[in-house]
Length: 390
Ligand code: MG
Image: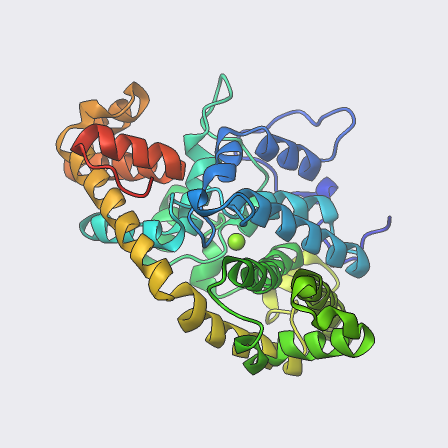
């Protein structure tokens, strides 16, 4: 498979923070992917909530299955555009490693707890996981991934966080947020594959949970056009008993349409500007994109899902409990660091800095962010005597 000149080439990687000899049979991005799959944080994704809390049903997406779907969509598009599939896969599998338990409710609560200590942001946390928190190698912390994989993992970054990162790694992965450049096409692609994946699976999980209906979805052309198209071809799917097949077939068509749309729109943009290298890509506006019509349809879908699913009263009720679990855990560990495992106590103790409270708070946030939903619930019960979300 030949790579396009604007694809990331593992032979020309900007390298790892700790230089390592090349592997005999694998490229640098294959190695990154393998390190991610073998990490502890990756295994934990299976017990972390995407939208529906983990215990609410066995068939809803978790962060793990979401990440696998992003990798599948990303690779499929990458192959078509002659981008680097291995790099796309590595970024996709790592993109959510920094997520707290309980989905966005957990992240919002932890961000509030950390307000006085620089906040909490899951993209930056994903980078902390692969740079620092995984303890697997004798000579260094983290997984020592290549620049290109790390660049893709740090999808967003506030200016303040970018400035702090830039101090510790001059000219590194945070620089583009200060100089307003784009990441590689592979990183741009993972961003859009993420969106395509959750557009589809949130409809799927939302309908199967009973929180949204096919009737309501008639307001969403991105889905409903394909539901009507499917029914026109297969009228027997009208019967209530065939509702799932209708749902799946409409989603399948919706996914394909988005994938082909991204390939066509992105290829057209690439043909127009013809970037000669990855560095040229970084100087240009974002190139991986939906066409204008698909972009508008995707926005309409999001505008539907926000009130109808993400802020559904039943979802909000559990997110209230989730916030309480995270907040109580934070308060408990912050005032009694010895309740954490030894390696986090050691992180909390790393004084020498000017702000010991901030050091402790960051260690507590690292510990909580790494928890699975069910572990957080058990710890909360152990520390407070309250049994929530179980
Ligand atoms: Mg994601």
